[in-house]
Each structure stands twice: as C-alpha cells, then as structure tokens.
Image (cartoon, rainbow, N blue to C red; front, side, top):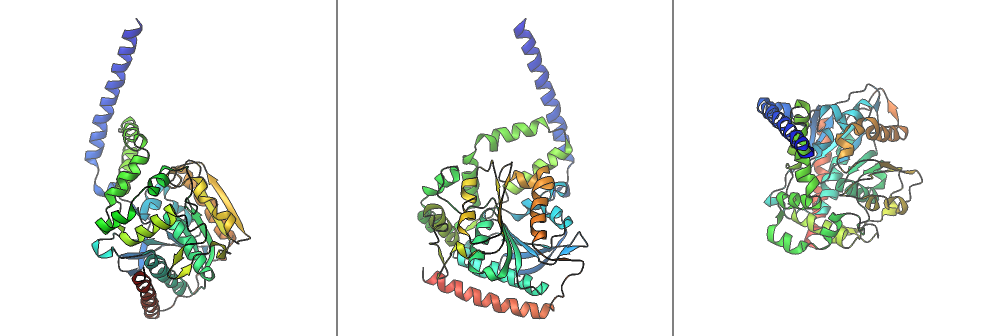
Length: 392
C-alpha cells in the first residue's frame, strides 16, 4: 500500500511539473525583448571617455540632496544590476529618497585595451568623472559609493584624493584579501596571472564566468533552474529570471594589465590593507580616509565575505564611521524586496544626514567650459598613467 501511494504522488508531481513547463514555454514565447529590458530608470549621458560612460539619473524627488553621489561598480559585471527590475531597483529607490545619482558604465574592453592599468581607471577615468560631476554641480566634493571591486576602487581613490570626497560608502567590497572564508580568495591565490595575461592580453569574460560558477556549482546551475521550473507558469517570475540571466552572462572582458595588478598585489600579496600598494608612484595609505565612512556587507556573501569587508573600519582615520550588516548574499541585497525595505533606505538616510539638502540645485557651468576642463584633466591623467605603465 505504501509504494502505490508514493508512486501516485510522484506521478501527480510530474504531471504538475509538465503543466508548468508547458505554461512556462507559452509565457516565454509570448515575451518580447522589451518585456525583459533592464536599466529602465531614466538617465542621460553626461560624459564619456574612451569606453567609459558617465550617466546622470533624472531626479524623482523635488527635495534633492545637493551633494551628488557617484556609484562605481565592479569591472567584472555590468552596473545595471542595481537597476535590474523596476519594482526592486535600488537606484530608483535612492532617487525617490532624494539622492542625486550618477553612475559609471565601464563599457566592454577589447584587444586595444590590454595595456589599460589600474592607474588609468582610478587616476584617469574615475578622477575625470568626479571632476565633471563637481564642475557641473559647482561643488568641491561629492559622495562616493562603491560596489564590490568598485568599492575597493572607491576606497583607493578616497585615500589618494580625500579632499574630493565628502562621504564614502563601500558595499560588499573587499579590502583585506587574506581570508579563508571565500573560495574566490583561494582560487585567486593559486592563479598564474602572469601567464594568463601574457597569453590573452585581455581576459575573456567566459573565463571569469566559468570561475564564478565553480564557486557554487550546484546552486548556480541545477538548483537555480529547478527553482525556476517550480515557478515557470508565473510571467513575472519568468521575466525576473531572464533579466538575471541576461545580467549574469553579459560580462565584459578584463583589461589585462589592470587585472594583473589587482590579482597579484591585492588578492595574492594583500598590499592594500597593509598600506603597501603603490599606484602611479604614490602609496595608497588607507589611513588618509578621514571622511564619514559607511561599510555595508552581506552576511551570506560567498564572493566577498564579511571578513574581507569589515577590516577597512579599523585602518581609516574617520571619526564618523559605521558598519551595517545585511542578511543576504552578494547580489541578493540589491535585487530582492530587501533592497527596497532595508538596504536603500539605510544608505540614503545615512548620506542625507551627512549632506546638505535643498529644493534647488546649485548652478551649473556652461557645457563648453565643462568640456574644456574635462579634456584638460583627461590629458593630464592619461599622461600620468602612461608614464606609470612605461615604468612597470
């Protein structure tokens, strides 16, 4: 009697799954490309340099924070993850809460970019983007918010140019790379990065994606797709699944020289937290970070574990500093309902408390003057980066 009952139940579950798959197929066939569009929050291109683009999001609140915030995302993925779906867009929520938001799109490196260095990214592209924002808004400093590797870049930039940063926010960003908590750190320690860069010049995105999949092979492959099948008959679930898949596999290649330095001197030699990292002839001393600092980490982050993020707190000289722990994973804290209810409000409140707010924006410079200044800054930064590259 026991076996037939289980057999009957199994058959019912199989039939139910088949029905869902048929309904899911109908749903997917009915979708158009616009149904799974990403990055829908309105924005405008305000500056570009080589493949880097700087966007400004259109305000959604009349009471706008007069200190603009620049979001810097990682090089290994696309920044629109923070604006993946309209109902759970953390960027849209920040705009609703009064932040004036800019974001860098790093673009897609190709073979022509294999000699781009970390100096180019930080002294060049980042610095020029920040100068553009300051000039446009007639301010002397901005708020800087970095995510993952972008948070590491923001910490480095704030140590080199503390006078330009009013408040610093790092989110799931690594600073201490000497940790055993994450498989990514083990993998990177044994990577022969010199041979890899010398052979490829520009590191293929597929190499990076395959490595990330190996970190959690079951949950990122079988488990994920089985979970999708359980909800394949729900159009909204299908749309969100396809948006996430689009983001996961829309990964840029990596500029070889920048990748070489980041892996060797941060992951393998852990120079940043020791204040031994040199960039463009200058030592990156994290104690130069003296502005208010907010560190956000995810408790279940398998890519950047808390042990890699939290140590920044102890090495800066900021008197106003805070750590926020979020229950979730590396990506989940941005794309789920938690981003609307917890993550976005906490960050916005923290920044708004430490920045002036006004119903009128500060006056903008003319575009001609802005362009001239940016070109001058770009030329200077590129010259510095080129010299640094030649001296490697």
